[in-house]
Image 1 (cartoon, one colour):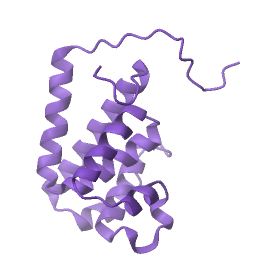
Image 2 (tube, helix red, strand yellow; image 1 turned 180 degrees about the horizontal axis):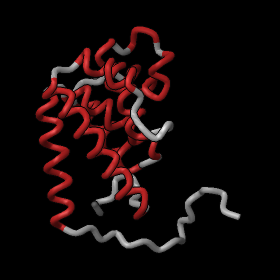
Image 3 (tube, helix red, strand yellow; image 1 turned 60 degrees about the horizontal axis):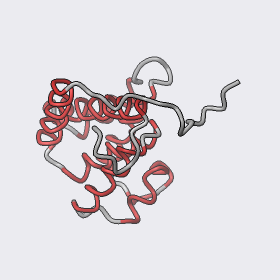
Image 4 (cartoon, helix red, strand yellow; image 1 turned 45 degrees about the vertical axis):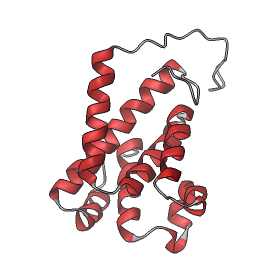
Length: 156
């Protein structure tokens, strides 16, 4: 019976094809640029990484968020954003709800109400970039978690 905990002795390849790495980085960078809100981009990437249990991405994006001026209170409450009152504004809340819906796909799809709320806060380009950012961080999370890349590692 497995307990779901990672064994540090499990050997995993850290190899990632250079073309895949470059393409995934390019999608991430284009989506973040297109979103035009670096702080929100980091909140989205951190929230997806929390849900996916990706220590590598959490470590990296928490550092970037701090550089972008995201305050510690917001970072501390991000995992409980729905209960955090006015710590997150409506636009951020819509982006975080969409992040969770796309990341978890609890019902097998993104609920219409979640998508429609995001569409109220983002124009077509903004929403497209937000979705691309969510997809990209989920790809990164899965690549890093599967290979068990530890936080702060230079293996990417």
